[in-house]
Length: 95
Image (cartoon, rainbow, N blue to C red; front, top):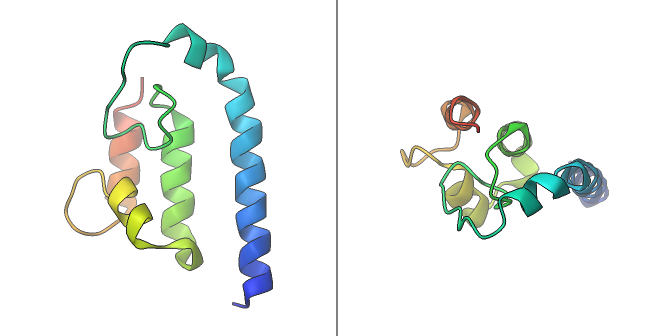
C-alpha cells in the first residue's frame, strides 16, 4: 500500500475517533477524578467501552498502522502479540 493511502486511512481513523469521543464527553466529566488506570482503557478516557474495543479491532485489521507503541498498548493480555483475543478481552471487560 502506498503512503498516500496510509495517510488517508490514518486521517479517516482520526476523524472517526474524534467524532465518537465527542459523544463521550459527558461520561468523561462524570468519571473525572476517578484516576482510571485500567489496562483495557486503551484510549485513556476513563471509560472502557466499544471505543476501546473498536480501536483495538482497527489496529489488528490494519497492518500499515502497526508500531512498537501500538503493540504495547493493545496487547492487553501481555502475550507478546496483538490479536482478536485482546479485542475480546477489552469487550468483555467494558464498563
